[in-house]
Image 1: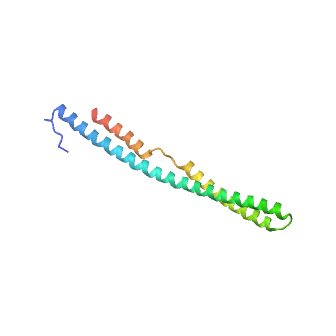
Image 2: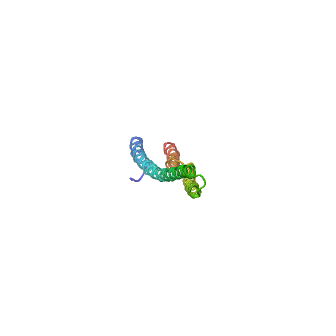
Image 3: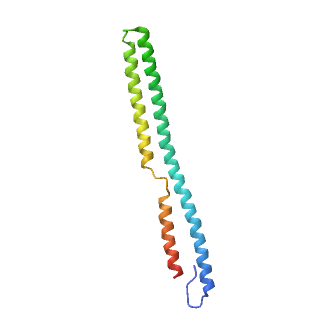
Length: 131
């Protein structure tokens, strides 16, 4: 960047300001892309946890159905009880995984906070430069 001195014209100063603002805007766009990529990656992991929880809960549902079928078929044979217990445990694990993923998604803000903050700072800087 050139030394600012008394001999530079207003046109030169505005030219420099325009170039610097262009560079700043490009850097802010790049920051926003990076920040959104990171947030999307984290959201993807949390959604993956919810999907895994759903799959485990579905397996639990199938085990509960098997317990009901065995219970009706055997009428009094304790095999259905063991299948029912297994089904309830698997369903509980699935519920836990779904809640964990949902809670993590609720806490995650998808707005590019860092970019928004620096854009506000840049606007203030630009106002100061024009004064």
